[in-house]
Image (cartoon, rainbow, N blue to C red; front, side):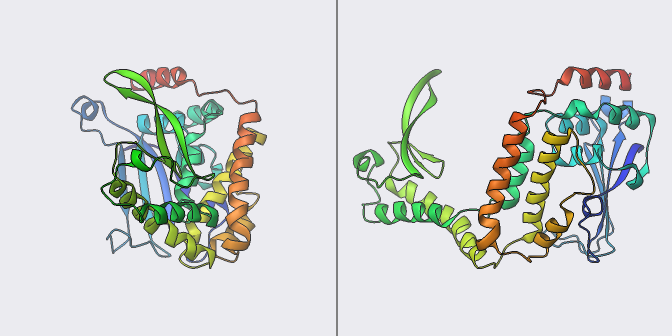
Length: 316
């Protein structure tokens, strides 16, 4: 591979590593002309020293993972605000293991990847906490709807009981725009925790969806209330990403190691209560971070033209 950059990655740069932490490296390589023309260039190349490579088996201390993104893939991921790409762009030089003029040029212009459109960051945060973040009030909304629908014949159309369904802050009727025969129309749907159901579906369909939803998220949320079954490493990643968003909004850059590394490490070790602290604190932190981004002086979106020209020039 024509490696243009490699760096140590993960908890070691965040300041949240422990004796049990594995070692991760991220890198960028530039594909060869022949591979690009023949469509054989790989977007990602991964190597690992982990002996047990079965899915779901986590690395242990001493395991080393290396992942190299092809340059074009990396740049487009950075444009879309993917967290790993921005982490690499702001990793301190002391963690670098390999560099090049191409990388130094990219890093000198790294501010061009920052904008108010940080959907990938927010999506990452929600992904890390979504399994556990359904509060009691939200669970109750699902259960009340399920309880009512169980009293109705499963073959009944939703439209027949439209006005009888108990409504609250999380269960309501709302009009949405929909494409019907290439024509945009407004259609009222039953919305339960942002899951949408049309009038012409059967109660059976709604019940099956909501029961599956509760089984997947509700039971985990209940366990989280008792500090059981929580993936604290995932939750700590959500905190870390929130703090990074605040850095982007307030400092115009990401600062490593994290100023809040000690607290993130505390979360990572499960030394906080989900019910008494995290359940309310994390959503508030998410909102604070997003509001800070919205009020910042960052551009609305990343201008991709600069980076497209950079790609063309570099590969030519």
